[in-house]
Amino acid sequence: MLVPLIKYTSAIDNEVIIIYNPFFTIARYILMIGALLMFFWAFFFNYDSLSFFGIRQAMNFKKTKETNRSDELKRKGLLGITRHPMYLALIIYLWCQTFRMTDIIVNTVLTIYVIIGTLLEEKKLVLEFGDTYTKYQNEIPMLIPFTKMKSRKLKLN
Image 1 (cartoon, helix red, strand yellow):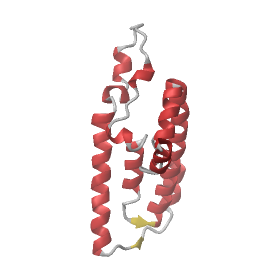
Image 2 (cartoon, one colour; image 1 turned 120 degrees about the vertical axis):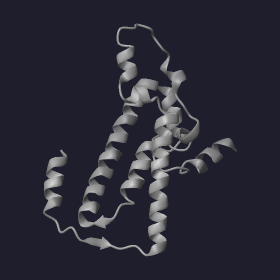
Image 3 (cartoon, rainbow, N blue to C red; image 1 turned 90 degrees about the vertical axis):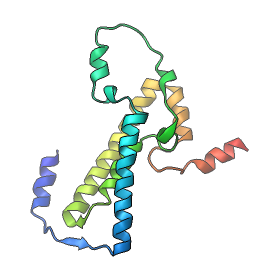
């Protein structure tokens, strides 16, 4: 699916259309470094890296042990701020790149792709974890941190 996008963007003028002043360049690099740190922090400390690559599933292929998945839902660290910290980090990183017309088109398509994928993953997680994940959805925002803080405070009062 990326082939038409690559073919289309190769025909577009590749001149930089947005040039940053030094302050915004520094801010952009800080955001990029922060996004990379968030991505790798989430990958190594919030998620099971072996499951991410399918290694754990391969190791447990013949085992018939049943597990209660609802007890395995993590809510600490970055997962207590946003439900999908790796996707958020990816979107931040994408939009901190240089801005040629091709970058804007590719970043827009990839951002839409990530958001649609996140919504589909949310449906899968509700099926997998049930009411536990639905409660987690009501408490923690999907991508943009701290957007559900007001509703959480109202519930406490």
